[in-house]
Length: 616
Image (tube, rainbow, N blue to C red):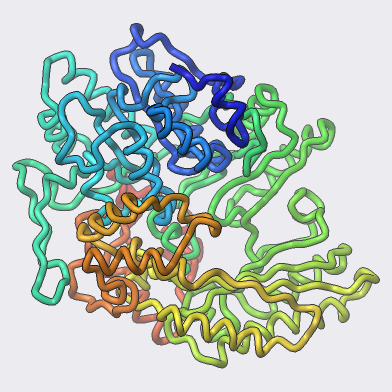
């Protein structure tokens, strides 16, 4: 069953639902043993821009006995039509109802999408709670960065795959196929998966006890043979890892309409607020030879006119010059532009400006993160004001007029001096424009964008309290009052959204009740400003008996059992505590290439696989 032409004509952007895109993979259900509905719980345009979806869609479909089809969250106008007509959520490829697949796999990219997760389950006709599902229901599996603290949504998933899924997810599905032929029950499969496949976490197999003060007392396995802590999986060799050489071409414009080349995984820097920099360790690089081959094949198969080199910090790639030179040899002739979206201030150069499209526009972006050197040392940013002025000067000398600077407020140990430093650094960047020989004759514009600090699991700041909403709002007002130049524009993130995000990021299983209430009240697309309501969220938390300050605004004791302690991301708690102590001493830690700091991630995969430069 697919959506009728009449229905598609009645909604905005029908291309979100039409299916039939060039490059899609459609298999005969009778020719396979297992089916997977892979869901990105956000709009089609967002989901189709996700590299992880492209990779896992391809890696599953290359297995002869597995078919994988895509599912996205319908926009509100389409959802209304679907509910009116009792039309279940269906896949793009075949139009088959998602509930008829063996697996319903959901990627969890952002905590504010949790209400969408419940909504797509409901639209599919799949019971929300894992405990309420029968043998006829799909196995609901979660993955992605939010699965490193799966507890707030643990009651809604049968299992999670923790870590990188290119090898693990096919292993899970292949195991199911074998056990399905033997007539095994869903529970028998889950037990076998949890026992034999590293990275599989089945929440129902762990009992949680709480202390009288509301903190977690313990996580105890209730099934023999499952691990006490579930260790994440990684792919050791990125050169031999599956990477899609053709992709599904969307009918409508998406957020990322370009070739995305994943250059390396992990990060050598160790910024203390950054979850991605910890959970994606250790650093593993692809060779330029592999990347150049993949780029040419993808260009041939897609015709995209832009290539984006993706990583957490692209300028830390050890063979960046070799790679960019190799790409430019043919991309310039083909009029294909290059984009490097994650350049660091301390490694920005005129040479890179001349190579990549992302710096050929009128503006350029840097992320000092904090307004003073003391606070940059606290967060281990390892960049200086001189680095920023040098990089801005290079940009201005090349004719740039606009610079965007990213900062955070609410960081641990932050003072008014640090906040005033944001304004001072922005205004000094304006002055650097006028000090730079050959600058544009137009007036400069420096945009200051400030987000709110959200403590995240598996970071040195996971024990810290987030500032209250009122405090964050006052801090933004103070920053604005410190800006005197008309050539500086100030923007900031919504503190109310950051508060709810912190609750969901740091929460435990007791939040499931709040999410159910939110779903019943029609919450969806909370990551979108037009749908988010702080007051409505506070009413939901109150009804569920949730004290949001307990999760977001409370400083945790280092000895406390944390909701995510059942997961082992490879970075040890001892390392994180050492980094926390150094933060309060405003002491920095060198990058992994300068000195190994013993975070623990080099032992993942059973051998020492960190970059050689980091082993001294």
